[in-house]
Image (cartoon, rainbow, N blue to C red):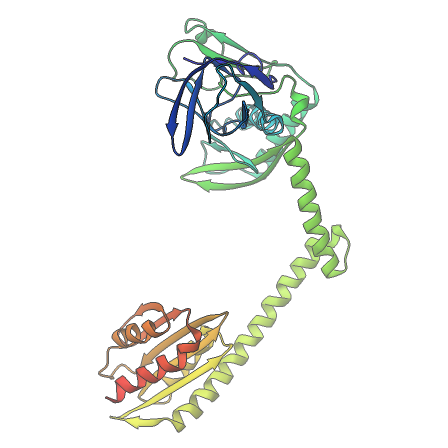
Length: 397
């Protein structure tokens, strides 16, 4: 089994190891060393990257024998290659993972919420809490406690313990791993079984910022960032907020109020537009019905609209029901999309679903609905006219 040099020293950036095996795998070579400082993907933390000899590391993972496998593109020639860790990536993971330990213990301390999941991505980290609801005050309390511990610059240490020692340690979460355990401790705050990489002092975490929460499978997922990620996130958010403030010609502090005002104004304008569209649709339906030719007791209303939403077509159909027996074959181009809506009076003998399916083939789309009301869409906007003509031809034949 590979000796893991990152266990005693997560700050080790370079090392020399003996190559034990090299096997072709996934278009590259899977290399096993007698020892390594490269962390393999495990426990929610992604693998390290860097170089092994002259080769760039593509992936690092564990095999069935708990050996650490280094995937590279080409064979490594040296029998004792030098490994070089991508330190910026490693230190970022150390910050985020230590931040996770702090945040998990903070939620347990302040709200009695256990952490049952952890994931570290390239932009943010998440923990899953065993609760279906977290209040704003609970989030604030946990975040406040974490950053207090960070600012106190407490020691973070790791050690290997025997199974007999485990019951006396007071682990935050019971481990299912058999045999000796690696324990990561944050001075007078948290004790956890963990094989990941961590900083030596809590101040290295920088700060911990909770970004958002969401419910996932009756649990609450908490998204957070630490250290450099928090700085980058803050800078990005500030740039976004500044851009919005510039658009409204207001100060940063006035943005929420101005945005809320704009939302209410838009709602009011949309309501007025909907009311006007109802009147317009009614008048237009009456005129189109009057001009439509009659076929077997029904008037066929065929019309193609430019830059109209399907909601307007539905208002048209509602208005046509008030005019008399009809068959409506309506189409519109909106947002680069071809849309079709077919509708008819209850007493009509046709099944519009079949008619729509045939017409949708021309616009390279699909749709569905009922016998008397069917709707579909496709990407061939230049074929809308042809699709409507085909539909009318089928009705007349």
